[in-house]
Image 1 (cartoon, rainbow, N blue to C red):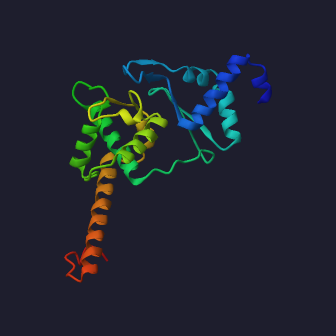
Image 2 (cartoon, rainbow, N blue to C red):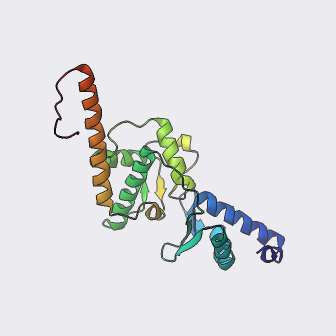
Image 3 (cartoon, helix red, strand yellow):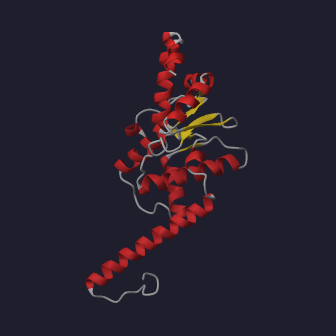
Length: 222
């Protein structure tokens, strides 16, 4: 493997190193990236480098317990396997990823194939309608979730995280399907909603028991 790298021109070898680093940091590499300001698509040079050196990268990843995957239709490379460090998502971030998947699906399957662009106002509306997010999120929660999704190439944002306002356009990449595709979206929403409802009932029960008043949910919580 080292011999392969040594045979490459210095600039190409450096591009290959940076591409592998980005692949581990982002988990995936897309062929088309959207300009953060104009949201105009443009070629991603990392994808071209990865595609050209695909065999070498695949062999390298296998040695460290990872697998290189490719979706030619979505034009995405991503890594999986035991060697990939899984990022632990907070509950709020997980729910927002789920909402973004739902919005993406609705726009792709909708009449006229609308652009897969959303904003905070629309995300909150979806959260309210599905009962997945029924409270006001603070700035820190939004920044954490958007930061994770941007790092892993699920979304593109125009500018800094701190400058995102209610109607700032947020482009949703097809990579959202990689992170939220193992189960039917409606089943996921139903399961999360039931969990949220159960937690709410549990908290109310605990408060009622602590105050010495009668428990109004005796048959729901064991």
